[in-house]
Image (cartoon, rainbow, N blue to C red):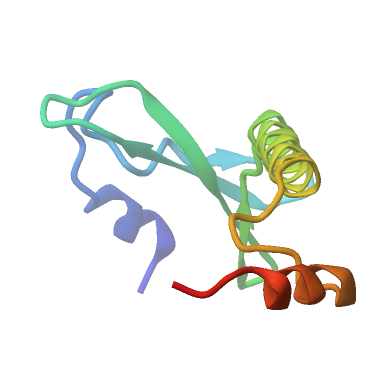
Length: 112
């Protein structure tokens, strides 16, 4: 099956409904097909997912990585772990001390 005929059969709607972009030929003879994801019922802003690169009869998927999102995720996880560890160090546990001195004081208390 011819690749161009296959691409021509893909549904083409408005910009907000399109999932596969127009194929782009590179100078070295490869073919690049961008892929986007559209969110929302009426088609929100499309976000890039990646590209299909077809070169020499082989297709390869190259995902689009948002470095800003990864950096933000790393910062949030680091901040959350710092807050949790600080709270764990600063806050005393609600149970009594289980040291030898603490056990001795518990034994001296009157019962009842």
